[in-house]
Image 1 (cartoon, rainbow, N blue to C red):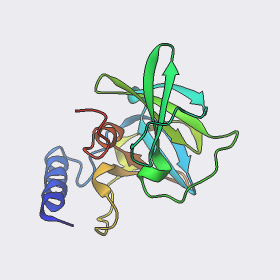
Image 2 (cartoon, one colour; image 1 turned 90 degrees about the vertical axis):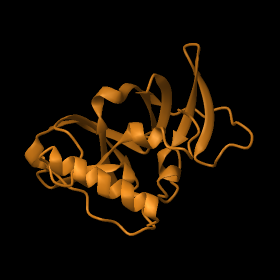
Image 3 (cartoon, rainbow, N blue to C red; image 1 turned 60 degrees about the vertical axis):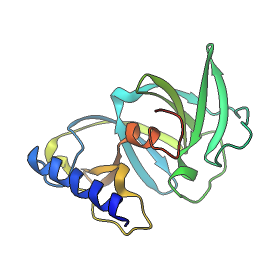
Length: 172
């Protein structure tokens, strides 16, 4: 990791430690769970505006490959991000289960393409564990913790941080 990333990780862990949750910045509450490839992820349900079936967006020239384009959602132009591509997952084909999670992030509406939506789970503080330290090839800045429910493991994401990251160029 570079020095800036190291500093961000140290600051995140220190803030979490001071909040009484060592290494985890995820809060207890309800999470929308979804699949990307073989992994299951969770995001704060309060960021979700709606879930829609996938429709091919209008491509925008010179945009990064993970920005699939834009759609018109009841008069609002919404950028569509393929989370599989953004997170470096193997590309999957779009099928009948592919959905767009419409998010409200910092006052902007953004769509996130995922393989499928599972359900909404309520996680307690005890069910959320710190995310492991990852190698520099994996960007762990947007992983806030690991949720554990029975045999299921959920990667909890800071979707607001991910969608506001500089390489997205969507939200300033």
